[in-house]
Length: 340
Image (spheres, rainbow, N blue to C red):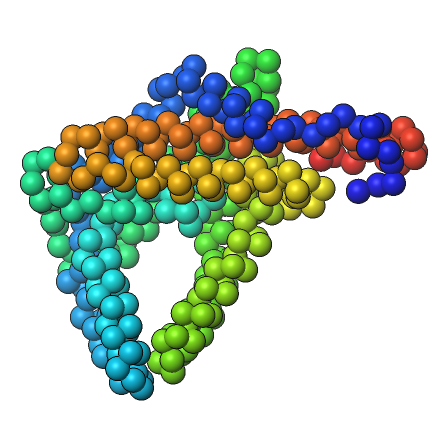
């Protein structure tokens, strides 16, 4: 960063210390897990708002046109398997899952069942409500996504407020400001996703028509490149809730923090992703038609909330560390103070 001896600066916050602090916060305030648990219970025992009847005919036409490009029996078999996966996903998709974070948005309530939609419950099959109007689907999807953002903003505010504690209560963001900045940041995120995703989707569809294997390779390459962006963008919401920043400056702060702390921050983000992904396999072990599913739901709610709390702890402590480093650099080099 600067040509100074390492021993002149305090050590940066540790990954394990932040994770431990996050788990301690949730262990002391178990009520924090109620919101993600309630969302998963709704997706499990509530109705399924299905759009299969509206989307499946459109997908069938697209797949029939793309099937003609298969040049060999192996390509045709692979194409058929992929088609079956897509149609099964559409059949089981629940519009209510848009209330969850779905890993697409920076702020939201993490949900186990939004990613693995259940089809059975202890009471039998889910009650399916078929939506056949495209206008209703679009309007309902918009309301559910925005509602998910609002609930997610309040959830993030709740967790960050517990992390900050009474000693830093003056830094706690108000509910209305939290909602407004959440909506702004989420809207920026959606625009960015559209700008990036639409051209990539068109390219993948063209490659799929030409050669399914080539399309699979391109999708894998895009996935690898996306991981390169995770660390700089991981902390984009945190400035809003920890330091009361606006959405744009919070994005800038996240990118800047990653620039100075990339090895440690990268290790923290990888730890969070590994814990979340690995334990999700465990939480999904109980079958959908067993009441043991509640154990998985509760475990997922506890772990994801603890990891969220740990991320707020890490972000707060890392910015304090950066501020300390910059102040010492100012004293040694006569530089103006830089705000982390």
